[in-house]
Image 1 (cartoon, rainbow, N blue to C red):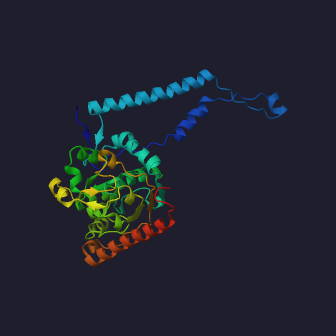
Image 2: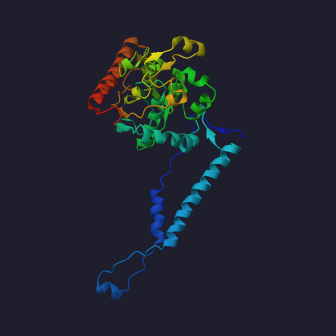
Length: 342
């Protein structure tokens, strides 16, 4: 298989083409209304009746739609085989993400977890921004659902570039998929580079302490690290958008942690839930909880001086502000929630 073309990051980025105006113009050109003779003009308005489409024509249009889909699928496969597709310097494959990975995650988002998205207008239409969210659920499905929420509900269909832990890039298979989906290592250098290039970057500062916390501590935010994400946003001059996710805590209720087994496997924790490992592979199926993802008002950072990123007190205050906003919204959403599953 040929290698994909690697494009310089932040340069020659593909632009979305608006086809609505062109399609409308072609439609107008295709339907020519004959000029009315003088007698008809004097007689009054003439009613224009659209011709009734024949059943055969409708069947032909449906077949044409399937033909286009099949042709598009074959062209996609040809590009994958010949390597005629592009990835950026981080390994992000936009075409594969849009056409395959998003399509695989969308049924979970729409049908299984029935995610309700609020406040998406708080995400900038363009330019860099750092989305900071709580982390939970034993397995990191909340990060994947966050990606779908941003892409499918934002008017500009923006892509979220998630910062992931080292373990993600050490797992065979998962490493390659994570890179293709736009994830990158959670380090300040990569995050700043993405932000300065105008990308949306997602971070979950709780890390493994958040995703692997016991069920009894659900929706209680863990420590947000040392505020490194705030320092990165300050250096890039991009806003910070707090994000609260409700529903992920209950997909795998973690009632125990086999620490000895986790150490043997090199994992941060080994979860024990009401169904796992007792039911085997069936126990790995998440519970169909009802999710809500709410984006809060952005916190601007472009008004600070260049040396602000080195001020530990400022970083502490901003980190605490982001954490408090997320926690407050979590409590508010929990009060409004009728049921875990509905």
